[in-house]
Every structure is written in C-alpha cells, then in structure tokens.
Image (tube, rainbow, N blue to C red; front, side):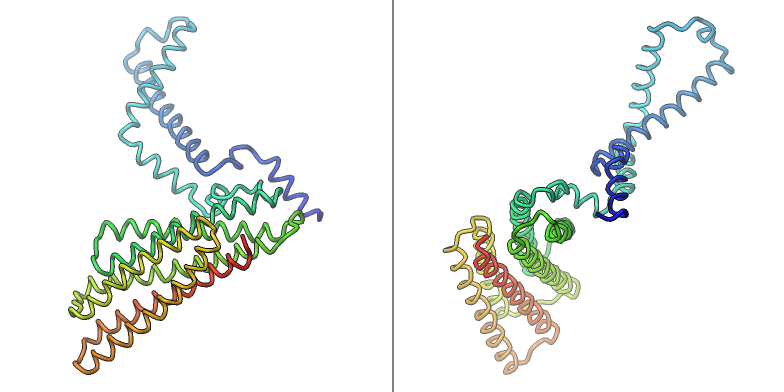
Length: 322
C-alpha cells in the first residue's frame, strides 16, 4: 500500500465520529447545535434583563443543585416552545448543509461491504431489484401522463426520477469500487450488475423523455384524433402490463419468466413498428397535424428504446445466471 493511501486510510479511521456519521446523523447534530445556540442567546438576553434592568434579588442567593436543575428544565422547555414553530426551517437548513451524493451513496450501500465481496454482490443484486422497481414505476407514470396529464402525478414522478437517478449513481460508483477490490475472486457478476445499472439508467432517461412529451402535449393543447387515440391507448395498456411482467421476472429471477419477457419484448418492438407504419400511412392519405405526428413519433421511439434496453437487461441476467 502506498504512503498516500495509508495516510488517507489513517485520516478516515481517525476522523471525528461526527465527520464519519451518516447524513441524517449530521442533520440531527446540526439541529441540536442550533437549538442550544439559539436557546443560549435567548437565555443570556433574559438573564441580563432580569439581573441588570429588573435587578431581581434571585441572582444574589447561593446556587443549589435544585436551582441548577430548575433553570436547565426551564431553558429546555422555553427554547422548545420558541423554536417549535420554526422546526421546518431548522430541518430545511440542516438538509441544505448535508445533501450530497457521497452521503447518499454511503446510506444506500455501506462501504464496509467492500471488505466482503460475496456479501456486497448479494446486496447489490438486492438493490438493483429496488432500482428496477422504481424505474418501472417511473415508466408507467410517464405513460399515464401522456394520456391523462395530472400535476400531482407529474410531481410524484419527478421525485421518483430524482431518487432513482441517485440510487443508480450510488450503485454504479459502489460497483466500480467493488470491481477493483483485491478480495473479489469473480468479477463477472459485478460486471453484469454494472451493465444492468447502465441499462436501467437509459430506461430512466427514455421514461423522462416520455414525461417531457406529456408536458408538451398538455402545454400546446394537442388533441389526438380518434384513430390515433385508439391505437395508442391500447398500446399504453398493453405496455404497462408488459412492464409489470418485466418487474416480476427481475424480482423472481426465474429463467422461464426471463424467456417469456424476451419474447414479449420482441413482440412489443414489432408492434410499435406496425402501429407507427399504420398511423403515419393513413395520416399521409388524409392529411395530418404535424405537431401531433411529431409527438407520436417521439413517444413510439422512446417506447422502442425502453424495450431494447429491457431486452439487454433480461438477456444479460439470463447469460450471467445471476
């Protein structure tokens, strides 16, 4: 081990506990410090008013343990009452101070697992199932927004996008360090999980693109024809069923389910191509709205790309026999 690495490890191992604590622990400590600082400032202000302005004789008496306990109790009660209306502000302040990806990664996957690669790989497999579940949820949410825009669903979906993106980033970083671990005897499983993370990231990107299309349709008041709506609504319902099958197969790790999903993926890709061909052929004959055609084309393109990456994901799982 190099001297630089030894120094870094020493610094980490001997750092104060507060610096090595989790993000939530740091936030709690900041709130506690703010509580005491504000309470102290308030207490000193009241003390000087009572001692030098009101000139209370209470301060000339001898201090007893009972008085210390009483003042401490009053301090905590009064400070709590004063700060209670501002609790959300304190939480918001602490979140701004400690809200970085490194802390999130440390919470999502414990770095200590790197010393036991077998356990680390198993944990990564478990986390990848959580990530895929969230990714599928984002895809389904985006599809529903295209055919029924809802502001509340949009906000919920955006939160899923942000959270899932952080999870993928944390998982990829952890897998990269795990792959370089000197204790790892089989890197094939780690490499497969890395490929899967990459495919999940691309699926999430195309799901986000679908949501953007939904927002454009809502913003520009695009109205699809009855024929367009008929084709696309059936596709949406069938695609949601397909995505749910993908999620179940990945969770169960059943080879038969994997094989069925691969067949379903090929079917969905072919179906999207046929719908595109039928819709645009008819539209050319009858005339069409250029904007609606553009959005439909983008939507079908994104669905097909999601399908391709799902196919890669499942085939990789089958080959690696994870």
